[in-house]
Length: 242
Ligand code: F6R
Image (cartoon, rainbow, N blue to C red):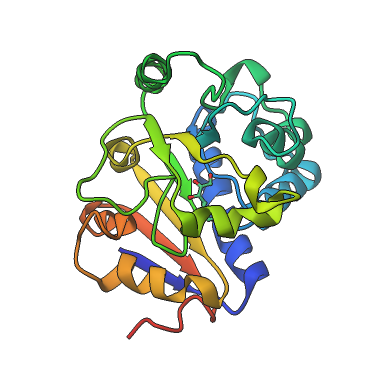
């Protein structure tokens, strides 16, 4: 595990953008695994800037998002489909037919999970997976559990996650209780992983991810077993690291 310490959110986003841009420079037809939430917004803004200024090319890139809320229409501004359109897809030269987000509206979510996993496999697997981290150390929406869930699956969101995500909704009651999420094995199969964390609320989760016991009770701790992980933290998120 490599840890990059940065001063603040901008520094974290800049370091992450360098890694993603370097990946696309070396392999223009890369398969990227992408996250939503507040954490990667600065990274996406920087990638857009690099695209606009020096022509970082996304035309051959394929993307797979980590998750979507169950029952959420892609047109809904709170959906992760919509989020990705707003923050990245519509602002660089990605081919829309190669941008994938799990279908939270699928009637059979198990079948949708299998379809999504197969699509990733056919695309050649994920080259670089971008992750945020929940306050309870979830990655994707793999919440603390008694075992690591392997592949794309339906998850019940923790009360802590629902409270944290309420900021994106009018009322806490509006936050969906279920999501469909890439599993831990999917994430571990990515060739490279970059995990971003900023702010004091993430400090304890970062400690668990980087130097706690490897346990499904802190899902991000599994990354200690991955051979190519870069953790990028700002000063606040690094506060509990030794
Ligand atoms: C989002 C995702 C989640 C978030 C995590 C942190 O696609 O999979 O694991 O990365 O909940 O969210 P933020 O960045 O909003 O603090």
